[in-house]
Image (cartoon, rainbow, N blue to C red; front, side, top):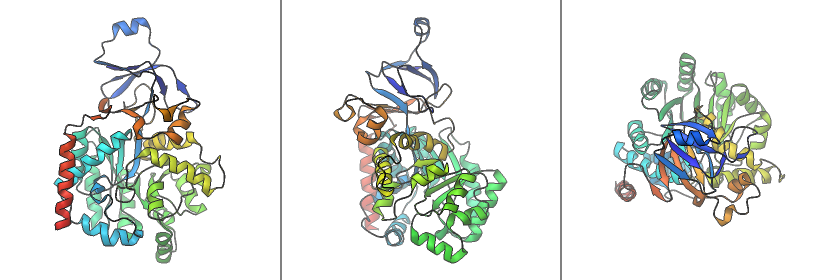
Length: 426
């Protein structure tokens, strides 16, 4: 049992504000939330008691769209249009990846996630065994998103992975999916739709990231990507759509009707000049909005604080309304919304029985003072320096600048840099 005391708690339960109470964890679960009696304190054996010293405990952030092992492309292929960036730089370098490389590059990404208070990633990438080993070895949670592309023969791979990784480890789950409309045949997408029906399972993919993508899809199929996916049964059991920058009113109606989350990636969309998604219209339509960084090749950081700030400020500019996309809705997208998009039903809020995926926000720093409104402080002035502790599944993985992930940090750095040097020479 681990005890968090002497601080504030933001449960992220709707209409439940900041509370002065304690949180106890037992194994990977939250066991107690409230003000304990003297008898409870005397009768409970704690393996550790963490004095919050007036700081804030809240649910950890969930990165709802990323490509973790793309750390090797950080600052490698910048300042290029999306299609050139993908086809001339990213895809050729990705062809050089192998299991060992993906393992160490993922390890590097996880360190960055933890410093951002993030304990779960909705990851779409390759070499899944290596990726899973890196996550499990670090104690980090991940939902794998199918990333198949090409022809219909790849559907069997998606099904095999669905059966292989679901239930493999408590930290790992797998969602059906494919890369994007423009990298998949219609037959493959239809096959994914059939798998969704067969397993009554959600599906996820890149969708409507650029106007060019949408225009080409309409040219091919007389439908937007969202409409195409819905027509193929891909959304029959819900899912998640990554980016959603260029949606029509009909697209938004489909997402709401089919319980499909829209995952917003503001920094990546800005850097690749993809556009600014209209989050306000999504919120008005009742769509669950989540927040993601995208990969470190197109962001280039894996920083949930930066995404939160960009999410709210860009909406204010886009809608010419300073009240648009308020701080509470942004913090929800980064925590509860992400958990919903990733189908992590026990990782959303602080409540008894939920997963102990938690972050301690250091309030004893200038950017958190004065404490007029803690939620607004986190979204508008918070940054990674405010992350004092990150806990995943009841394990402290990052605390006061130190990592507890089963590998030495300098080893991870050295391996990553060696891999990148080798890949550039090949």
